[in-house]
Image (tube, rainbow, N blue to C red; front, side, top):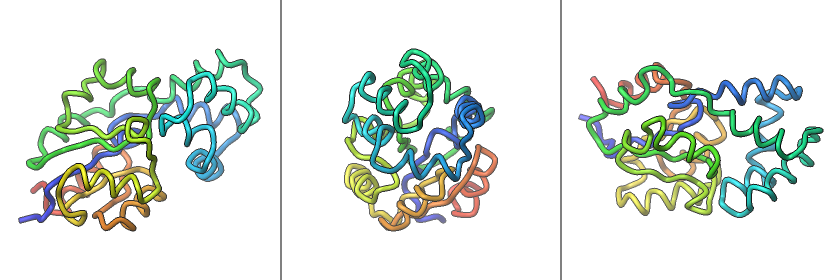
Length: 198
């Protein structure tokens, strides 16, 4: 029997394909290695995904910080397209999990509203912890501590699945069990290895 009482899923890269983000990175000459540390650092993306800036403020800062050469409307169109679709079988996998399931995603009103109801994410999990509502963001330990507090279970009984190693490391620093996975096939393997699924 597993000691895991909650499985906490990141959305982008685990449940949701980020085809639009991949296209954005290629179009503007970024790699994941050059992009993610800047995005997760204190800046436009960090502020927006903590609910600390308006869409207009975010777009202006985003264009400037990443030297995009886009108008705000062009930047908004590209940004809104980052999540492209659910991974096939993702919500079906979540439905198999016999313990409480929740999302913990660095997200913002633009992406959240596009996915939550239309893609079935709202009803697909027991709980949701979007960063912009918490006022906190991964990979900082504070967001994991807050989610564990709200869940009311010991940190080591929470399994966190994320596609970004920086976030996995942040979760582990807060005492959670955490694995880096990309897509539902890898997520299933992690669930099996932790004894959550047979």
